[in-house]
Image 1 (cartoon, helix red, strand yellow):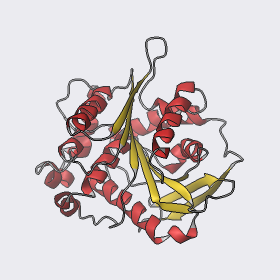
Image 2 (tube, one colour):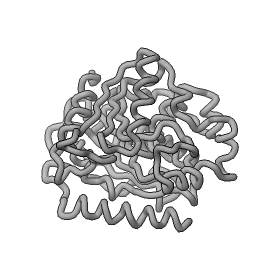
Image 3 (cartoon, one colour):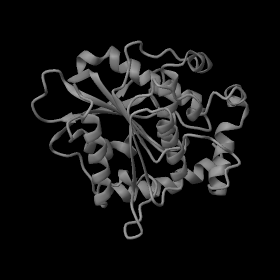
Amino acid sequence: MSVLSQCVKIQFGISDFMRDFGLKTPDDIIREDDYVYGDDPLHHVLDIYYPRQDTPDAGWPIIISVHGGAWVYGDKEKYQYYCMDLARRGFCVINFTYRLAPKFTFENQIKDLNAVVLWLYNHRLNFPVDLNNIFMVGDSAGAYLLSLYICLCSDEKLQSAYGVVPQAQFKPKAIGLNCGAYHIDFNDKGVSPIHQRLIQLIFYNEKTKHLIQNNRHQPLDYITEAFPPAFVMTANNDFLRSSSYALVDLLKSLELTYVFKDYGDSKTPLRHVFHLNIKDQKMALQCNNDQCDFFKRWIN
């Protein structure tokens, strides 16, 4: 583990602990924890949350959440309260841990996301879920992984490059991309030196050279008409704000379906991934309501 990634983990860990301190599992949520979805029982684990009420005849629509953390940090425990808050809006939410850089690569993380989808289809009869209504959310690095994976599902070149075979029937109705990174640029002067060093650590190394040299790592270069309806959001003090605008410009140029929200103003400054702070910020609740309302437009 690099010194940089360890420092990021400590900094993020303190912030997330303070964000979620005092939160508990809501009484109106059923949670089922620690299912193993892959070969690594330490990292390949997931939780499932759904409402404690009568299940719809078809089952609950599904949200698969891809956590953020700069590719080097995070797990399902850090996202449990956010994901349970989504579940309270009438969804079955899958919250999973994946392998982290620098020990593992973003290529491994794409494979882990695919393994979760395959696990869902293989175990669908064990849970009150509706596979006809699958949605996905991701923030920050999780939004990068989600957008790249969505592109991979309809691109055989990406599938070959990553060694991933997606579930044939898998087609999410819509996705939520929150404060994400969609174009990797080591020379980007708009981000901090620490962010630049993280990009160097994660993307420009021997383990990922085969993907970088062939430009198999840039979501913006692979978005086509197959991209699902997207709810894209950022915030006025999000350090990745320009990346969301670049994504929206592309979606608009391709005449794809999307909703774009830029939350916060001078009186209500909002930072990167503010929507995870369900305890203290009214705007987080508003954002999550907006996103889930967008998803419900696509349920049939």
